[in-house]
Amino acid sequence: MNEPLLNISKAFIGDDFDDFLREEKIYEEVSAIALKRVLSWQLQQAMKAQKITRTEMAQRMHTSRSTVNRLLDQNDASVTLATLAKASAAVGLPLKIELAHQR
Image (cartoon, rainbow, N blue to C red):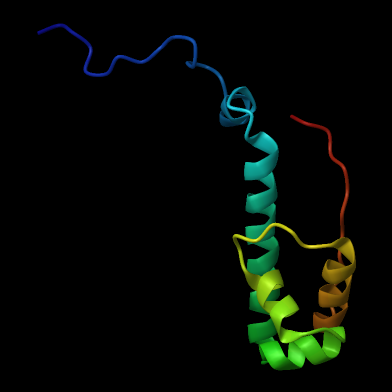
């Protein structure tokens, strides 16, 4: 009855989640999707606060509604910097992109 309830490999104890993702060789993909989800959510919140429809957003960005749909799709990480810049200008919020040192 003194057996552990879970058999956890000691190799992963103390490692952080980023290390695990790197070992699985999916860190960059997962990070890109997470960042896109945050950006999509922020844009949707700004649009909602300003009562901007997707059609109006496309007009403000001088692009198609399908581009706006892709921009707001949290699972589509293939967005360009130019599209992000147009979107931030369309909602009147600055876009800040920077490289950061890892913790």
